[in-house]
Length: 118
Image (cartoon, rainbow, N blue to C red):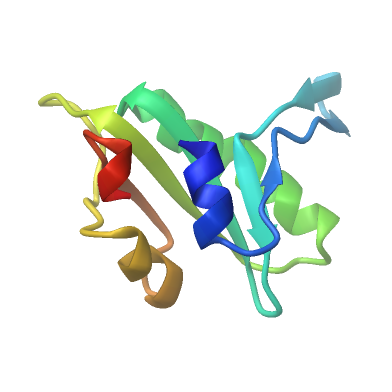
């Protein structure tokens, strides 16, 4: 799925390791992918099934870290999942294009049951 994202999102950085230090000490994390734009950072997390943990990673860890690393730029996050269930977090995003061009979407979930439909 990330290979397909690379063709659609210029400048995509795949699986970077980020080392940080916070109140709990030293840590490291590995977001799925991100792309720096002039005015923002686009952050992607790919999951087999959409889950709250994916959204928590986007908004609670990866997003704040990337924002700090890129001088306070806003970060918008998208969880891309092949499957959904009753507790999958929203809001639902209709397409990758919607996420890329609608800056009002700060975090969302895109259901992609088949990579051909990304």
